[in-house]
Length: 228
Image 1 (cartoon, rainbow, N blue to C red):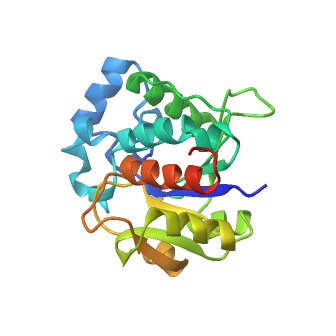
Image 2: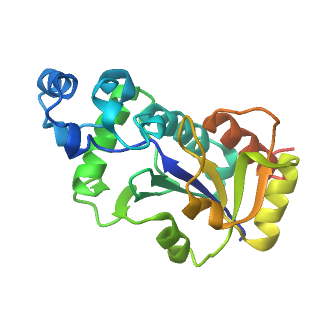
Image 3: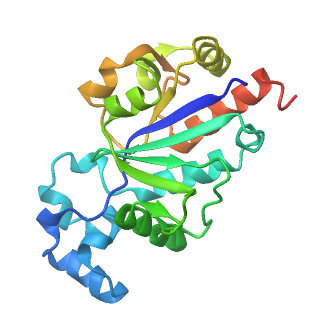
């Protein structure tokens, strides 16, 4: 059975880095939540001033992007029919392998708690032999090797303008993962760009990650005759 492999690349999802754990904005959040700074998600809405010195700060601190996108993908008919595999590659080179049966919290604060546990312990549930989500230290190239692939279909606003059906057709015919950026601003790293066999755009203007994910899954559902 052919499945669509979808990678959210360089996703804006990480624990607070050690360089800024002593910043007042981080300490305030930690005190309010009763948590260690290194066990909290970096969030630009809370840690904007602390993030000013971070490298690539424009691509970091937006866990809400992954939350909304996972809600969209995991609830899709494509996933419910077992035809979707989701991998979240983070901006600091972790990969979250998501079991298709996972149902993440719709409430954002509960999602934050879940991901903090995942990135701290390495899997959720923590004591499960078959976790619903597992976080592994792995860069993008290593993820492709794990999938047995060397090339991908990269979706970028700078790519060739094509229809979503063509993206899905290529992915299924050549068994290529589809890559969507999981960050708010900027471009993919050289590592990710170098893996692209095809670089496509589905719209001439920038789109939110979850919108791209939604349009791609809908096109694949039609192609696979999951939806009419």
